[in-house]
Image (cartoon, rainbow, N blue to C red; front, side, top):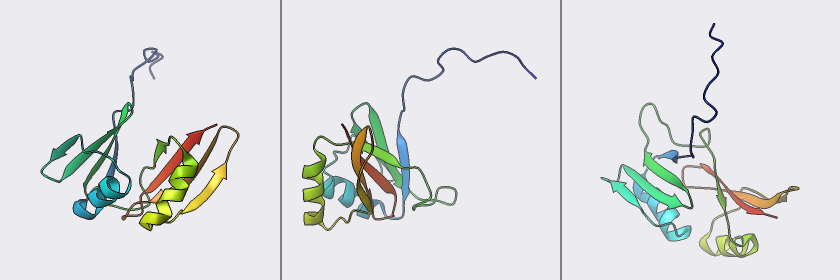
Length: 125
């Protein structure tokens, strides 16, 4: 067994979070038309990226090794005004899956995209 320790920092940042989706067209409608995200890269509508702050959310067509749905990663999006978001979502028929909730450091809620991937909407206190 090696006693060598890793360098102080191997990583610089989170490059992206990827969600496999069943239908890229349906997912794009949700992320772009409902959540208002802007496409920053698109490879043949099979991998679509949205830059948000320093990170990137990527959606990709599900395949045999990457299935769509609720058992994958979860992304947390920092919102500017949680109350405004909570007022807006019902106008687009987006149900709040969980919350709103309060913690010692934040307020938030959880919504789901068309493939039931969870999205935490987060506002620091």
